[in-house]
Length: 83
Length: 83
Length: 155
Length: 155
Image 1 (cartoon, each protein chain N blue to C red):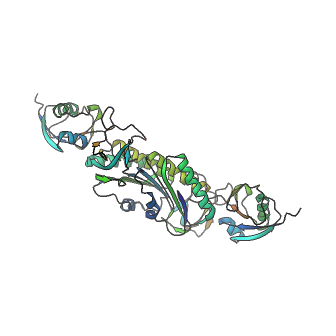
Image 2 (image 1 turned 180 degrees about the vertical axis):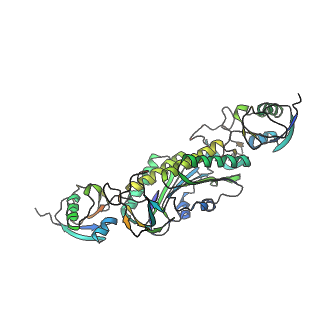
Image 3 (image 1 turned 120 degrees about the vertical axis):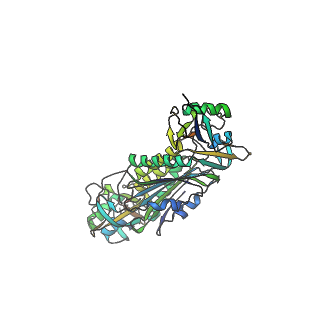
């Protein structure tokens, strides 16, 4: 089974600074948002844990274990501190 | 014992309209604010009861049964409805 | 702290200008507006009358109580008197604090106590030509039932 | 209902202008200001960043929840992004209602939920030259203890 897909990633705040980018396309074989984050965390040394983050897929909140599909836009959301 | 005294009265809102005056001097032998109000109520037909009112003597709240003295300014305060 | 009776329209910008303070993180304000309906009657206008000397004294006490009870930086209140039209601002309360919880609680305290204790009276003018001083006393003609500590043609 | 992210300074007059309504007797607003101290550190400036698309969507949901939970007439919120100086307004919430109790409760609900749920982040710049994204996560560097649901350099 070929699970290769291309995902659009956008980064904000702490993750944007740690990645050094606001957005990128990425080829991945991760099945879920959680798997994708673990891949990114390993590669870029993000120090936030998955359980500290929320996930948005295609512009709305989604479950961490939601499957991701080719062409999806995925955003990992650090703990919010607005207001 | 001569209890005759002259009191300055000021009226507000409903009592002002029922009295037809904003203020007046009045000679009275009333010993307390309560006695004074009963006198006024009788004479001018005020329909508020003493227990519905607060009293101010010389610019601050006072007990209804506070003695009144010659030269005092007395104000009977209908239930407030500001705000 | 400052409680003040105004004969002229309340100007928010003027009321709020003394609040700038770099320690304040939150500011809560309440505005009471003249609304068109009270107890099912159509209100056209309001008239407020104050025993100004005592109103300002009692209002100031309320502001000081608010500062004593809650960890706030500044609290002020302005109350309009005279004839007001629909939508006009009758009362303004502003409170600043380091933290929002205290600002909300103190602002609520001030407006509740002002409505309960400050010698100011409201006369309503109705669409049908009637008018009358509100008088929240049982059995009296203009006696709206209690709601939120006293329902009237403002809030 | 309207939740909006602003790149330019929040203008209270503009934010409040859609609220005129003759059925509203009370209006409560909250303003979050940049303050000079957080957790004992001297803050010089703040920077807010938003995931604007989702922030406005989630903010709008909060305003609709407020209208469903409380008997209010209108609720709006504006949040600033970019670099802010001490005293600048970071967030504004306004709620009108027939009665003040609902206006206070709904205003409090909106600011609490905005702080809890809307994807906006704050970076603090300190007097000593340090800076950092606030991150209320246990064991993480910038992790202020909870107060009023999250203490920060606003309220």
